[in-house]
Structures are given as C-alpha cells and as structure tokens.
Image 1 (cartoon, one colour):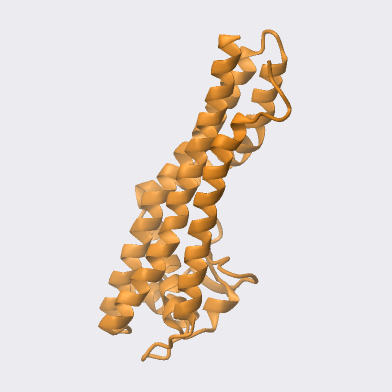
Image 2 (cartoon, rainbow, N blue to C red):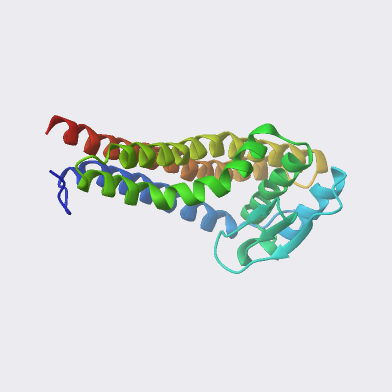
Length: 231
C-alpha cells in the first residue's frame, strides 16, 4: 500500500540532501576564497571569455551579463555566453576560471563535441520527463492496474538520470579546455593555474553530486515499485 509519507523516503532523501549540500558549500567556499585573489593579467571574466572565443575563431558568440551568483552558462541555442556579476567584470582568479569554463562550452559547440550535442538534444525531453515522472508513478501506485503508468514514469526519470551522467563528461571536458586555453593565451601564472583548477574542481563536484542525487531518487522510485509487487 502507498502512503503519502513514506519513512523509507528518508533513507534516500537524507543522503541526497547531504551530498548536494556539501557540494554546494564546497563550491561557494572555494569560489569566495579565490574571488578575493586578483590575477596578474588584470583581465576581467568577460575579457578572458572573449579572448578565448576569438583565439579559437569563434566570433558569433555574444558575451553578456546575467544577474545572480554563479548563474554563468553558455546557451548553444542563441550562441550567448552569460556571466554573472561576480565573474563578468571581475579580474579575480575565480572569475577568469569560470569565464574560461563557459568559453570551453562554446568551443565544444563550435567543434561539435558529441556529448554536448547529445545533452542539448535531450534537454526538452528531460525537462518534460522529470516533471511528469513522479506524478505518473504516483498514479500508477494508486491504481490497481497502474503498471503502465509506473513503467512510463520510471522510464522518464531514468532519462533524467542518463542526462546527469552525460552532463558530467561535458563539464569536465569544458574545464580541461578552459585551463588549456588560459595557458595557451598566457594570461595565468602557474600558481593561478593551481587555484583555477581548485575552483573548477569544486564546481565539478556539484555535477557529481547531481548524479548521486538522481541515482538515489531513481532507487527510491524502484523501491516503491518493488514493494507494490511484494504486496
């Protein structure tokens, strides 16, 4: 029988919450630390992003400001690289690391990096599927013959899990491209490279956390299905 509050949910939810919290705290602490360290070049995040784009023959990507903290992203649909307030006009080590990372995504797009193309193609399906997955599973659990709804919900959420798995190599590759591009451009010193790798490494842990959380949530859904069958 299905209950509105399932105690077993806590077995999966608490680890997921802690993993996500630790990853978020880590990236904020590291970013805050290196946001106070200025680069020897004096270039801002926006200037570094443009430098990397142009040096890779990419001239049709706009670099824009976006409000918020660590809301930086590259939008391949409109070829826009958006940098947050702590990155766009900052010349800190953290800022140029993040800016270079987003420029790395633009390079991936320009060079048709297959994992990025796959992730981009999955976005519409995953956005719909992740919202519909639990309602479908819930309907299936409440109906006597609701296996079709349960199976469809599990399938949709499994696609969301696959999406997080695909995102991880995309992000790691963008970080590698970022560090390589900064070194080639000659705008960072060896100690700054170490700091930037720490910033990008902390950011990467948030994606590892996302994978872990998604898998834990999927396991919980599967446990619901198994208990229904046992009943």
